[in-house]
Amino acid sequence: MRVRFVAGNWKMNTNRAQARALAEAIVAGAGAIPETVRLAIMPPFVYLEAVREVLGNGRVALGAQDVYSEPEGAYTGEVSAAMLVDVGCRYVIVGHSERRHILKEDDALVNRKLRAALAAGLDPILCIGETLDERERGLTLSVCERHVRSGLSGVGPDQMARVTIAYEPVWAIGTGRTATPEQAQEVHAEVRSILRTIYGQPIASAVCIQYGGSVKPENAGELMSQPDVDGALVGGASLKADSFLAIARAASRRSA
Ligand code: PGA
Image (cartoon, rainbow, N blue to C red; front, top):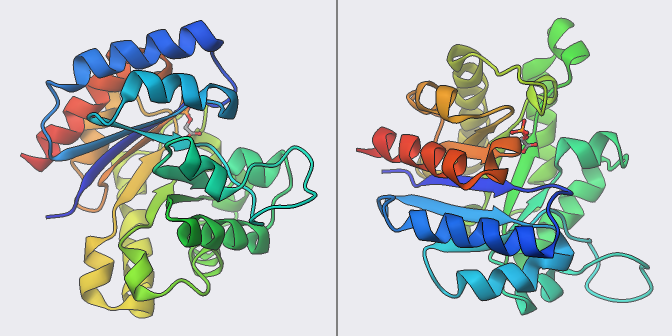
């Protein structure tokens, strides 16, 4: 059975006290979530250590929202994968659409970041997804295929067990507009079939593919009832412990 995985991307939100309080509330409720669901939260870089103190080595893992592609050196403002491991991260998001579109990251940089994360021992979450314009022009599947193939370039089959893919249609992120379960399933199934052509059936069927984009307690169950939707990457709704935990519970019902 594929792992279920719900991760909270806090983006550029919270202050130190709020970050700790949110992590505490999530930890307090996480004990009631079945172990079949993997949980992680991604606070801003500067609060990673504070949140790490709250999480300890418990049920909820720590992740970062981004990483730089180089191991060290003169890259002002950047953070390396080894630094993230050093402060207790297990996961890192790469290729989030806000970084692709606002910060102009291209496919080649996303791929270098993903490989740097793997090399340092982090488990990357590779975000893929089309813009509204691309969807309206019928380019959804080709854009997602490009993101998958270029993002995973040079990643071996043994490393794929550590990679999660998050399908996040750009038009659904932070907009309150969610892909329908059928729209999500169509892309997830296509991604899995691309993975099958690259890595073969056993690996493709084991890869966790999260959906992201305005996931909330009200729609999480329906999205995750789709056969290839294995979890959620949650932005806005992860800033409230109750809604994040409700989404995690929905993931556990899927795995029941
Ligand atoms: P959202 O963000 O849930 O606020 O739409 C999702 C994401 O960007 O990962």
